Image (cartoon, helix red, strand yellow):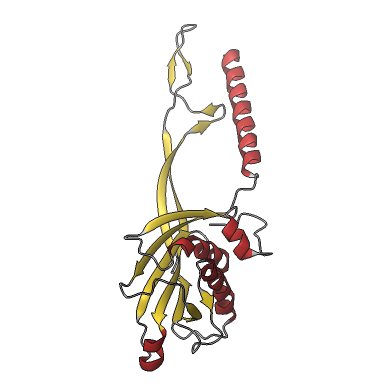
Length: 242
């Protein structure tokens, strides 16, 4: 019986040591990373050469003086410039009118169930079995049962849509005649659109004015050179929820 107690104590010490090591590893900073889904379409009549553009709000009720729109427009202007587009001084001086839409969807609650082993004072609970030393039973070392637990977590759908429209159709008829359209979405635990937006803008850059054929997956993190150039001095100091 004494040897069983020693084994039990040793096992508990091992569990505590492993727990401490895992806790130490969890404090190591991880790169902030996002998974994005990108879908891009282009009209047959879309111009093939780079054009002069202006960016206008695409969200209903938004205006050009909104501070959030001004911040997000800055990111879009940078990625468009990287693709060879030129920013116009006014809509009359442009060839393309870009409509920028963005937002965060309603929270989505997800549940999952998992099992954990049962415990007693010496560690895992094990079924009793026969001892060869005496006529009776003693605690063994095999799993005796599991307890079922249910947890939940919340995610948000963050989205960004950029439409490139014909200027003349917009000025003359107030219509958004799309020449190309690129949509980006990302699902994660953070509803902070200011945090996620530059990553989505960077992920979409290579697909602006192209046809992806279907929705594609692009992973991007804070080590990406384009992300770092977009963020400038506003680099994240820690890894917040994704």
